[in-house]
Length: 171
Ligand code: FEO
Image 1 (cartoon, rainbow, N blue to C red):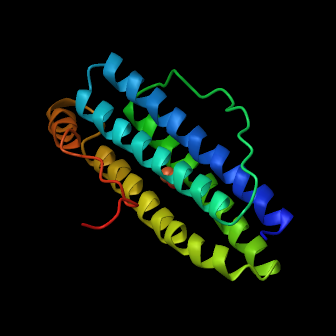
Image 2 (image 1 turned 60 degrees about the horizontal axis):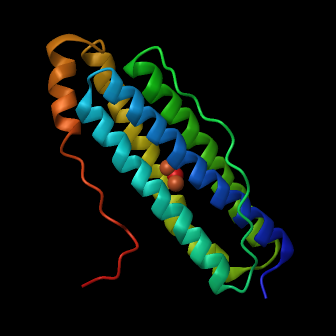
């Protein structure tokens, strides 16, 4: 049976992943409204990834015999001052999520919950990639000064991102 402290932290993580999805969908709407349809697509894929993360935590807690408790999702930001602001907020948000995953890992270690430690390792690695990807986008935005022809080209490239469910059964 899963320990109470781990169950509480996993439920907090489910909420955080759904909140991430909600935030990125809000950012997608912002980009759509400002005419950056490639960036809107990128954020839509990000939203789908977060839903997949939330669902994976949900399934894991069920598999371990824990009780899933879905809490309200707090309000997310809807207005931004531009593309750089959006990606800075994205990086800040991912850093918060990374800290939460690290905290969950600490609790699993304290509680000698080896199954949860093993489960979480994928997310530890994923957070490194998430932060690096957003950092790269912010670097690119600095190079093109967030405007002009460079921004149009970048937006076109962002259109190419497609969602691949990392937890889909392998064919
Ligand atoms: Fe589910 Fe972007 O962390």
